[in-house]
Image 1 (cartoon, rainbow, N blue to C red):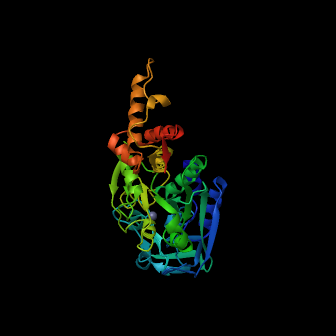
Image 2: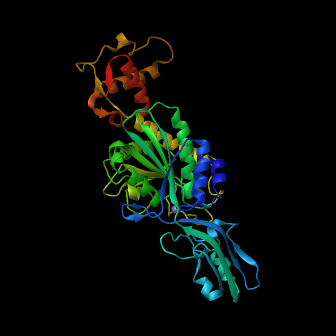
Image 3: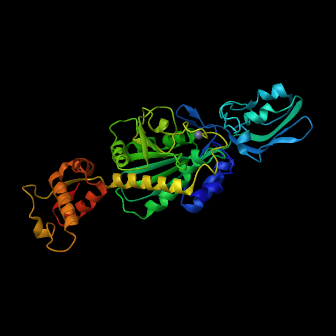
Length: 421
Ligand code: ZN
């Protein structure tokens, strides 16, 4: 995951443009993707797909004619969607087009102006402080013209009517944790889930944040409400922070209960917070017209770590170890959700005579304690295989692990004692 992230890191991504296409092309070497293109100017709900933006170069020359800022060294230097310009300005005039962050004085802040024609450079506060009086030349060779917005999907078809959505976004330029960590985690999740039997199909979305997700929802408006089981927005999963889960807008979503359960059993879990309309793509999924069961599973919450939206969210800020840990937690949530079925007894009158099925007590051998646990687990599942209680309810009542109970339930199904609903 880290290696792929490293490769994707330098591309100049925005909500449209060659950086997005290159990102999708690179991901498609790893996993099969279906790409959707939407022309600039297309109306999607209340939004209009913007013009496409690409940059050839962007530089600031100091009063002596030296290049002091060069976009080719760091794409964060140029505000995303800056329009072309070639102009000489005094320092005072230039400063009106410079964005700095005094609270994080040595880092380049990340800034965008997608829907309003403007240009700006984003520079460390301490750098700007030391700029001398004089005339500066600014040359931005960018192109903003009608083109297209592109997003891509990967799909694992397990012949189910319901699907799980893993949503990531591909619009941030050189930042590692915000955006890209979620992208590489989604790619790896696809590879892991491809070979696992599941009750659900899996869809992986790689779209520019907000407008790309709005396009995806617009194109799938009718289908998604009936097909979506639940979804997770994957972002900020490469740093060393503890995990955060942001619940779906619908408090009763099953995914909220499953993650509550997984977090209660995990030593890397941090906090669980309620839905709010401030955040990432959950804002669209959980808008009232959709109100889908989509949550956010992240590490340090976006906006709540100092490196967020700056040049310090770089390759040193994320690690393979953290990404692996995140992948494992995602898999645990997905597998636990998948395992959480309801069962019903073939005949619910009294207990079955379990010894008849070799499921009661084994005489001799050292495994007696283990068997005793298995017998207890069988008795829990047999009793609550009533068509009402799912395995999560049985796990919470009994204190046994849900995935262990699922193994026991599968044996009981094979023995003909219960049916999966
Ligand atoms: Zn962001």
